[in-house]
Image 1 (cartoon, rainbow over the protein chains, first blue to last red):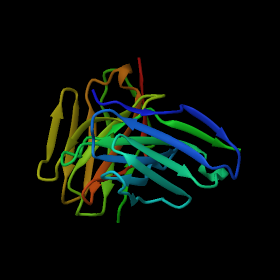
Image 2: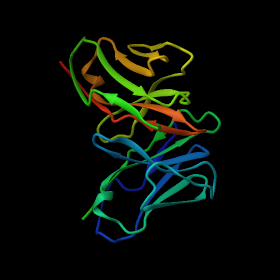
Image 3: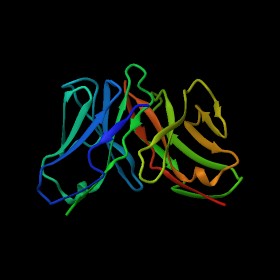
Length: 113
Length: 111
């Protein structure tokens, strides 16, 4: 089975800190995604990457950046954390061209205080 | 419009009953409609999916009904079981690789 591993289950950070969320997948998938999950809003796409060093903005990229230096690793960066970025962050991967079945990690619950 | 509207937000069904969750969309360019199931502490997992050229897809107790003209699709869970208690998300694919998700439905099956 494909595994998508997110490095932290829970994180607490201070306002203004630079925050790194790490995601690693072990099945050589081309596509990787970062979503945030908020009650009543569902999952919203922040950024995605379809190849090493390639990235595209999703629907809510403001305040975030990403890095993909290796195929298996996709990092989400909060340049200066703010309280409105408190959320559950989910990483996912999928295989191109059969990119319909996303495999999600278990999520990182980030609290910014 | 890259949006999918899902209802209800929460649903309580008795064991053995039918659970029905509805989704509606506007963008006719969507070409793939999956449903995801999420248990507490886990990421969402693909449950079942349908393409718009099919009106119904069934996998075990789970059925997707798709109404292209109304731009609506729904998930039916027959003979609902306590183990089906989870949050369910509908989604739609746009562009080459991106999914847009509904708001989610928290389903509780009472024993």
